[in-house]
Length: 246
Image 1: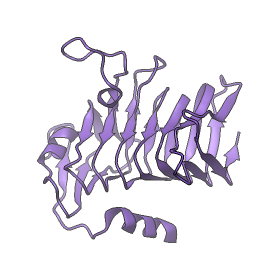
Image 2: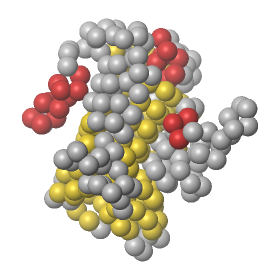
Image 3: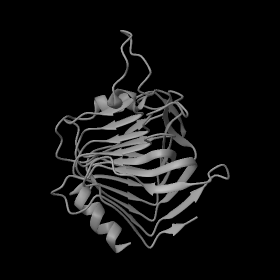
Image 4: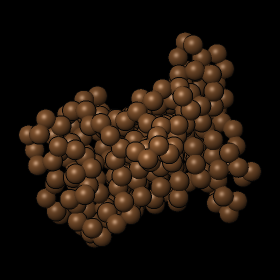
């Protein structure tokens, strides 16, 4: 608990001050979609803002732009509060062009000091190539009691530092990857089929890459051989510390 408090203070910086924005998929709150609430949040705020998601399924790509720092997505239960989409890098945009990795992700974070808790973030495109549930592309992002569900490249951690606590992440190929320094604290990693858990691209001048601390790794019955990881770039760094392996 002590280390969670320290990390939470480091990520949020201040006590919550502004009134929360509430989202309900059935239209019973101020906002019906998560993106509407993000768009309504104050830009360049120095005060944390909570976006509270009532239980429901919220479909569609969500972007937290760089000018919306200190946002928190708060669900009530990851089993009942779900942000979902079904795009991959072979999906087409309205002009007929293939989507970029960022645009095909379910949740794209580009603002610093973002946090989320008690949510499921999933990509239901299936086993059809790169299809991110989460693209965390900003410093000081924290996720507590969240589920990230996908197949290939489920979670991308990019740019500086991220922290995951008591989260569940599933996929089958490179399903946790990127160049960030990211700590996965007491998380559950579940491999759906033969493949690789990690694909780190740690920069040469970074002392740490992906760190799994007190985690648990499980596999589906269909999985016969699961590798802890493979390097995406030459200085990839991954550490599994006190982790239970199936």
